[in-house]
Image 1: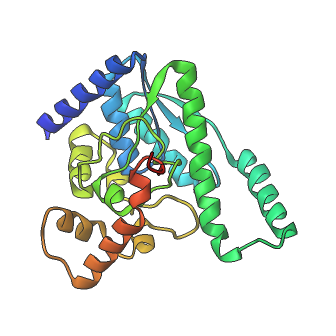
Image 2 (image 1 turned 30 degrees about the horizontal axis):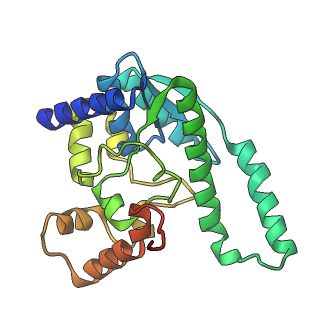
Length: 245
């Protein structure tokens, strides 16, 4: 694990140099993936690493955990509350759709969640431009493979250091880096609504996805779910489609 951490830290430093920027920043959610990234960028750029906390109708415990992450790795932090912005923007969109008789109530929860992720992306890039930093993403191998991220939201980043690490490997790295225990063992959730968890949304578990990605056998029903998620989300892992010349 020490070797993996050293490789990622070296890679992050190389990317900073290649881009001719000053440092790195990450959105800190209070979850394990962003906690690991916060620790990594602090190691890579001790004087130029920033954790941005962006509450937007989250549970209060998420913000508390995010602050514990920044304290545990000693990274500089900035808190920008996006609740008011969301409360202005989302109802305005809803009203226009309703006035045009185009409101699809079944899709509203997803649209709401995606808007929050995209508001955070816009905020991170605004802060990053000010500091001349790159935006570092937090998606792990399981999330990347299944498309469990918002296109141009938490998927809208410059670097993805965890993309080859399974969720289990991220947990091991978190322990190695000194991420607070309560964050390592909390149930993975984007905090989008009460009781929301990653695994309930995906319909399978991180353990099964990890095992499948490593070439192991899993129940057929889980394999079908994972394959379907991967196929449906192919567009998220590609550049925008363009017609042939």
